[in-house]
Length: 381
Image (cartoon, rainbow, N blue to C red; front, side, top):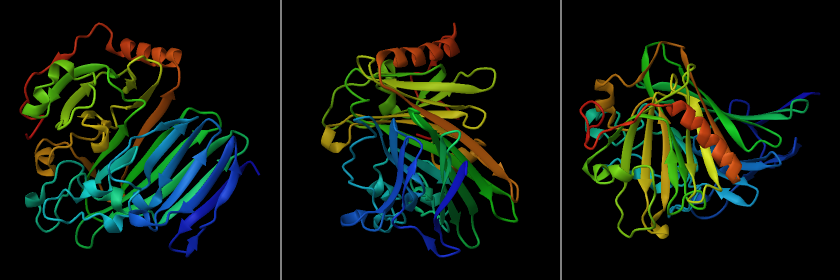
């Protein structure tokens, strides 16, 4: 058979393939259940295409935990040692910051009802916690589809963010790759299951630490406009695209962007290390994800030396503020919105240079508009 479908989890039919381990084009796919500490009971699915290996966490909203290009680990070293089972993440604590107790992924989705700063007072009956709930909800259906003729693989999971009398949203998350590919494509669908109209938000919190991030590393992006989120970010606006050495006590800096794109709405951002010998790029459509956020957090390594490249449907401000600006996805009953992000690893200087050239072509002769202070309508802070 050219195409094979493996159902790893289906709660409706009582299916749970705990010992799944199969050869796939270029490598293997396997499922394990972690034991001990706050990882207890977490399901992990690893896919190895022969060049790039990655691990997905169905227990945590189908988050992308880590990747490996050969011996190079892609992700970051969080002081939170995970992946953490959602049962240990206090999303409903009064500060709204409980989400941080489970945060250690290469890519976690933020949403679906809200995806930004905590905003508990805006909706007391159904509070908006930091970055939303979807990243701490387990998938109820997980499957792997393998095509032996095209050497393509697709790992999919379905996660529902539903609450009686409130939201009824479904995420269908898919990771696509093929034998020998230096990365993967994330293809997601968000569906309104309700009989009433709904609003949704989605942000891809894609996080990198060493060795991709090092002192002198740079973000390369086709910038139309950049705005610092707050006064703290404004302090570093002159060096927004470069990264310093570890600094004890460093306070995060966040920048909001409007990016340039080609005629089809496609754009690209690149993180390259200080010597331009290693990098990673994200490619996506600004028609689907019109807003981009850069998170810089460079304290001592023990505290999490990391940066976040974050395409989204909105900026990660409080949900009430973003709603006032109209930065929400409106879904009619049964309607589905689609999103796609391609993650590509660059393991040598020529590959990094080629990606940088493509971004330069998007920038063209346009000069970025750099605001030195927060701007009305862009940021709540």
